[in-house]
Length: 253
Image 1 (cartoon, rainbow, N blue to C red):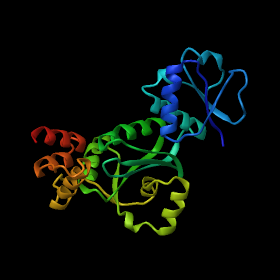
Image 2 (image 1 turned 90 degrees about the horizontal axis):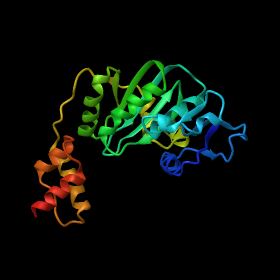
Image 3 (image 1 turned 180 degrees about the vertical axis):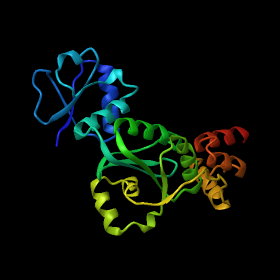
């Protein structure tokens, strides 16, 4: 399979690019000369100034993109050689750090872990731009109810069909097959049909979910104190992060 080539003498750009490549666990080849390109290179990432050193369509100027992640997504798309997919399924494994996977025509295109639930919508918007498709479907796991509903509510304005997937209905063989290929629950979720979401969902946590957030706050503070139920509720509703909640409660001590 073709891979990503990297060529730039811009140390700052090179440093930032490699940091993201390693974080996303993407394979790449460092190119030492624009005149000698190995056959296995399918796309080249470089700077806008150095772009003129290369010929062909599969050259991406990183600093012309909105960010490095966008440049890498475009590089991955070019590696597939496809300009239009029949179906794109986007799987979301909800949680405080949601997993997201993009599957196009039964091919795992990419997978990532978000820093927080609010990052999911930006990631999906970018994926839709990078991978043009006749049909898009978002599928989200049924766990982490409050966070799941927060993510769903943020995605409804995209006007893309959303399905809630019962992960327990996934066959053992299907899960094991895709774990071998990518190791992410979001990839398995993308391939399971679920119940359609018709409208925004309530953000009403149970006492159990509130207690769970309080338990996590005790862990973060090494048992020194626990955030209040009111603050835990704000965390669940996405108003503040758990780390911010701990800092606020600490100031009150």
